[in-house]
Amino acid sequence: MDINTPSSFWAMIAQKYLYWHQPWEITQKGDFENLPIDWFVNGKTNASYNCIDRHLPDHAEKIAILWEGNETHQSQAISFQILHEKTCQMANLLKKLGIKKGQVVCIYLPMIPEAIYAILACSRIGAIHNVIFGGFSAEALESRIQDSQAQLVITTNISPRGDKRIAFKNNVDNALTTCPTVKNVLVIEHLKEKTSMQSPRDTWYHEHIDMMQKTCPVEWLDAQDPLFILYTSGSTGKPKGIVHAMGGYLTYVAYTFDIIFKPRPDKKHWCTADIGWITGHSYLIYGPLLNAATTVMYEGVPNYPNFSRYWQIIDKYQIENFYTAPTVLRSLRHEGEQWISPYSLKSLELIGTVGEPINPDVWTWYFETIGKKRCPVINTWWQTETGGALIYTSPDHLLASPGSAGLTMQGIEALIDEENLLYITKPWPGMMKTIFNDLQRFKNQYFAQPQKGYLTGDSAFLNEKNEYIITGRVDDVIKVSGHRLGSEELESAAISHPAVSESAVIGIPHSIKGEAIIVFAVAYPDIVISSQLTHDLKIHLRQKIGPVATPENVIWVPGLPKTRSGKVMRRLLRKIVLLDLDSLGDISTLANPDIIEKIVSILKGSTIEGTF
Image (tube, rainbow, N blue to C red; front, side):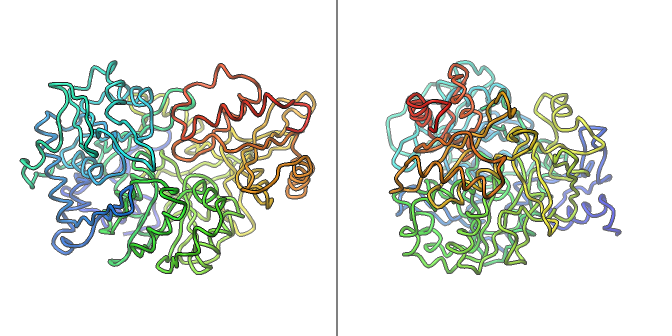
């Protein structure tokens, strides 16, 4: 087989990483000008079988999932055999509730093992799972259920998240007032508290699950069948239901997990992402389990009961792989090393980042303080739409360039055009199949120039080592006096100042420059804010990037508005500065909606002409 041609290479990968009940006839059908693209045409496989059943002869007693609860004394070790039984019981219960192949099941759950059982149960019987992040409001939940036309919702009554309690069932009840497609709600009793149940719609999981058989036949599915729908954030317009197909997605995440994270039989992999995001799908659930790896799942938050929780978990389970987001690292760095020093972290072999570009200063802190200068920092660049990582820093090289996204995966080809836009120039199996019920939007948004390839929406450049440096979303580019500056680049420069722990940078209209730079800065504890400090930060940015990067204003704030996945909402900051407060939209999906009022209050006591 000639693996130098893309179709032969991907055929080899699919054969290596998956069990196929029926071989495919054509590896790739279609291209960027003829969408959607079909991978492994007429091949049949099953996600649940590949994640569980095929491992049972050799790994039945091996731990598949290590679960750490919200409280430090809560934990479960779930073997592949137990995972098989629990998944089959859940699948049989779904069938009892009328779920059939091709129907959509909405999963609105916290980070508990039942969420993984539900995901794998859906894939076992051919249902399409639509996982919705547990932190979303009833309004956000409602729009995603409506768009996906879900038949059933799996949820819990109430769940802890740090020192808070999230009323999942309450949110579902409020959302379902306008969701006529939902016939049943399956409720997992996570905490024993009084719960409103609506008969005959609502069913208690614990009242039926033990009566279900522990075996369930596998539904062999076509490689083109949808495995799941996952919605991108609805914070900027109608949410998009990203559809990933069975054969291509499974092939790509199995392959990339193996290459990036180098699993071994004794290795434990902890991806801190929520299952409501693509990172949780690909590198907490499917990637590890397809490779028979042990995956760690944590219910709580990084700062409960204190800021040492992540490090305590790493030492407790002797975790080798740790994969988290730069926003988490910035927050933990901000709190100081007194939370880290009591823990050895000696089990760590590989530390990774995902979700956004990592500032060089944070990269260096991560490498030195967490990785002890002996663990490679694996930076990965990818999106909900791409299925898995496309660009990464190799685990075989200890020292990548701080902040670099690395090189393309084997099989991936990229292009940076004259406007610094990043394109992927050839199809790959992990790419999204379409936008749910909106093929035209799919074509228009991502393939407007099919001769260039898939438009990522990110800007980038190559450094002297030909590594990719992702500078941020195209819509986060600020143009000052004809110079294009990326928000991420400016933010990296800002947090390299010793007083600044976090920053967000936006551009606002300026009559002479076109746009002016506004810096929102969060200071470290015990830093005294002063006009001199503000002046120093302006000079610092000027020195780091150049005179064009001198901010018009610096605004010191107690925190930044972030989505539940940790992304800073620059759009909201721009509207606040421009006093466009009536069009902020639904801020309930923010992780910290109260910060908006605090920032507005700070701005009301300042003037756009002066230093904030």
